[in-house]
Image (cartoon, rainbow over all chains, first blue to last red; front, side, top):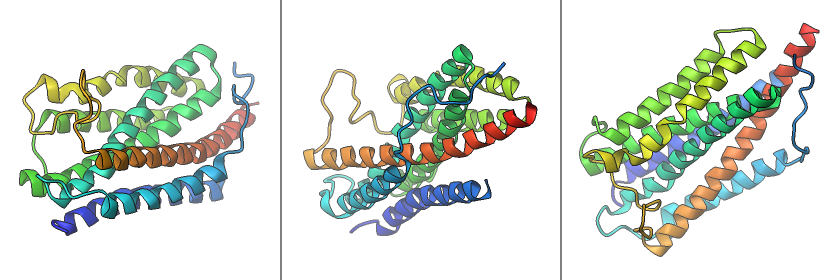
Length: 32
Length: 233
């Protein structure tokens, strides 16, 4: 697969960003 | 005077299922995007960034249209439910816009040779990002519930104007950015069928993610609203 580091970086940024936001929501909800 | 914090719509317990469906769809679509979709004849494999970049952009548009509709809902009915919907959708829209810009920048480096250029699409998208970031900051400037919701609603209605500007900027001005491939005016999508199917599933997965995050964020906001309004009584 050509340009693999760019592809992997983009997927990590997007899905990682969404996961981080979901975790922050779970924490905010826990703090209630 | 606010009389109720109740939702104007029937309550449906979708929240746990949305999270599960969004996670499953995200895993499936990542496999399709990285392994199932064919290699592009011109760009090679790096075009696969499209399967996260484009849905993030479209869902940001959807999120900000929801802010617009919820803002009208608040001004019309004064139901806090609409304000909770607006702030929740704005926050997720800012997240998706930010992710779209960063993923686009990563895609730009191997295809354009630069991480960033002052291209109309990039500039108008950044303006959209900062406008809705400003919307979220504006909300923190007032502690009065009604005043904050009303000010935010006015901005939420005005800011939606940027969405067609972002989308059509590549047609109105000379742009390095690719022209619309799927939502083309007066033309079929200029995309291979299997690539189009992967993009369609990706949009579906991002839509599930959007609604899962929206439900969670609204739950937090409505609990906060109830605390504020009960403390005032």
